[in-house]
Length: 216
Image (cartoon, rainbow, N blue to C red; front, side, top):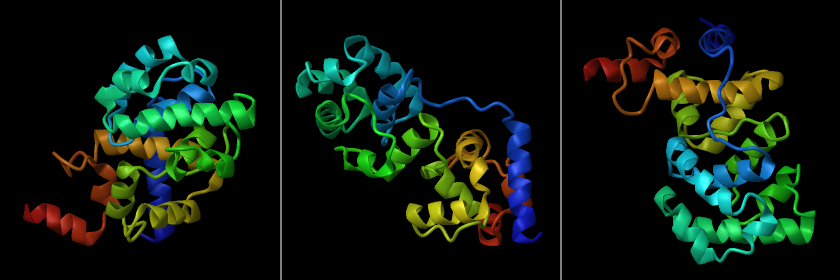
């Protein structure tokens, strides 16, 4: 298969498997999405979805959030891990949203990435899922699968994002990054991986990845 044929195969297979795409993190607006994505760093989406209702019952907007202390936020979000850093980030970014953005989440990569505890991936998820702006947030699943599928050299997530944006049509980015995440979880996980179930990797996978799997 040519590279373009492999890309088309990926798109078609994912569309068949995920014609409607569930959103991984529960939220009701850009602010609650931003907080949920921030909490998801090194934490499962399932865990985040268990914790955010407890946090949002007390504060689901920046004005209520800054009324809470960093310590109070930390206690609620502790099960998500990295709670000292995340609680400071949530409190700090809420303050900045009030002072600089009239309490609204800005629709700009630049302004989002200026917020404490918000990196490029978090900003990309918010721009994509809250505002519909084409973005390709790369998480561990996408990074792993793009390498397995021989669509990137896998050196780092920055390179993987560049490669994904180059080979996939822009109008598909917002759906595709979610489809790849779901596929990675269901068919091509890091642990307990069964190549027989992983139709995409089995069909177009990097030779070294396939031979490594067969050796095991």
